Image (tube, rainbow, N blue to C red; front, side, top):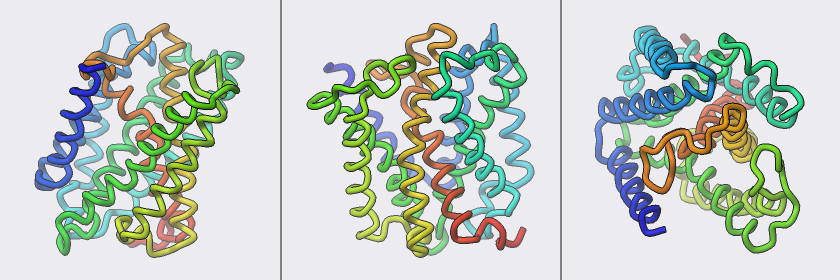
Length: 290
């Protein structure tokens, strides 16, 4: 327990420095590092015999994405609409992921196809990376920290849902949520997590931490609620992939916490889904100049 707490403290300190101290170039490098470590850990979950091929594929895709729209330009110019589409593709993907998780272990043949697995891995990672870069760049030129508060506010939805689910599940959890995928999760824990996340959401909204994404009230509520709910399936999706290949933790990079994927699995869904739903409901997805 001591190692887990110490690691958690170090991680929090690193995140604070990454968000509030590093300039946008170093923030991008940090986001890319998270992406590449996650890709390294994901290879075995996708049934690659070696980690290198999927890491190489992920690196090429990220490079092409950066060539198509250098993220450094986001701090001064609008995000190209095609990059928003790259983030928005996460929405239909995670809806399919919900079906796959709920169908486990009855429908698993798709996992025998390396091409499908590769597409699944890329759709879990690329929209997340692009979404992080877009959030942090929000109003960067006018307020250096506005995007940092925005990133941490969206991430806090997941942290609150996870923490609320953990403590509620420990206290009153009785009904298994999806025992085949994650035996320790309960329905009571899920409800407790949702309530706590909603409280955190309204607190952050009250202090205007959602920046431009809090302007359209309906779009914000749909985006926030959607991110909270679907983030649960980000966690379950990774758990399912680990079960399909018989792996307990995605890695050992964080003592007491497992790997990078174990730390960001819910964020992989929450961040792109939040952005996608906001753009979709507000109409921005179809009215932004390229």
